[in-house]
Image (cartoon, rainbow, N blue to C red; front, side):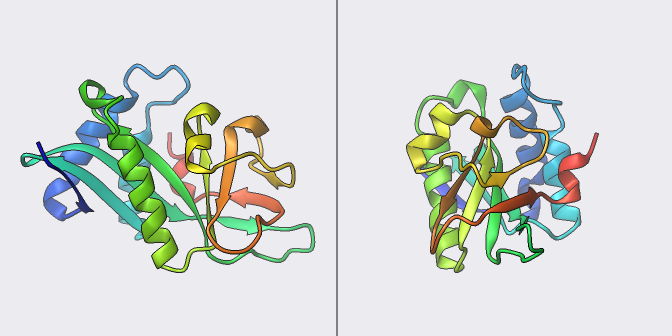
Length: 171
C-alpha cells in the first residue's frame, strides 16, 4: 500500500476530525479537544500547514502546524516560528512510521517556507528523534519544561515566552 502525504482539502475535514479523535481517545494527558483545536485554527485561517497521510483513499494521519509568538524579556518577537500539533495517526496504524513521515514532511515544508523553527509540546522520547529538545530560555507557561521542545530550522533558538494561537485554549 502506498502512503501519500498531501495538503488537506475541504473533502478531508470530517476524516481529519475522526482520525484526531481516535488518535487521542486513550491518551490520559489530554483534554480530548485536539479536533476542536484543528477546527478552530482552520476557521481562524491560522493553519500554516495541514497535511494528511492518505492510503487507498482513506485518511490515516494528519499534522497541523500554526504560527506561534515568542517574545523575549525586552519585548522583541522572534519571527518565523511555528508550533507543530496536533499530530494524529489512527490507533490501528500507529507504530508504522506514518507519524514520522508526517513530522519529517511538515518540517521540510516549514524549511521551504523560510521558517526559523518549530516548537512542540509532547513526549520527549518521541520528538527528540526529530531533533527537538528542551531549552532553558524558551518557556511555555504552565508546562513542565522537559515536555516543551524546539528545533531551529535556520539560526539560533530564541529565548522568551511562547504563545500559541487562542485555538489551543478551546475547551
